[in-house]
Image 1: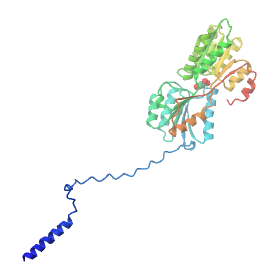
Image 2: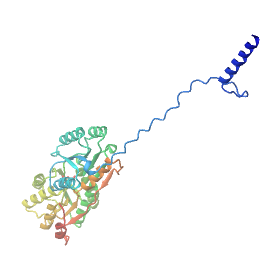
Image 3: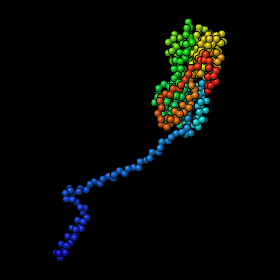
Length: 348
Ligand code: AHR
């Protein structure tokens, strides 16, 4: 009996030992480690969908045009419509009818229009844009300024593609100095674009920088809203007061054409008795120079659409652009012997 018990004890200890893991005595007894949290399973990295690469065919542009105030604007509108067709992009065109409130409302419409991917604007005035620019940013719609700049908020638009209007004014002043060189008197009248517009502000600034340096006095300056009719009316009113004027600076061709008509009706010979300088270099200006009634026109290039659409596509593809891409421009002269050939080669 006693032997059987001893056998059972030995057998039991053998069985128990066999269940115990081998523990090297030298090792501190293993203390049950707290259950280790599961090693984080690497969440499968969600493969980022590759960023969309935009093409012109994908792009819907909302374009806010100022209105249709003259030859320059007609050429600018044609540039945007024709180039959109050539590139195969979808263009939604909004005519602001030269009314700032309408242009702001049109901007808001494009922000809310789910089809519009990018907004392009030719701003009627330099201020009044903060809210719609913030709304466009919140809606993730890039904004490109075409033709005219605005005051501030550079962080809220991608880029401004357009002329250096101050330089255009400087060029006009420099040319008026040349035309009046040696003149006993240097009284000049200025016909200004719509109040608050960048070209009106900046051309006036630039003109005074160079004109006043050669002794020119800007005796009269008044808005004629870019138009032939108002340019004539304002000049007629000035002529009723005095004919002591040696030069007229029209901030665009149309206002200069109005002044030319008024001078003729007052018995003065335009470009001879009174020197005339304008800005834009439209087909009408070349004709006036060929007719001998306009001395100089400073070019302001309206054919901006190819550059502007290229910037819009780059913006949609996440590219960073300079805040201003200035357009390149020339000056044209009535006395240029090649004027007829130059005029024949012009696109607008
Ligand atoms: O912004 C450009 C100006 O706008 C042009 O000089 C003028 O003709 C147009 O109204």
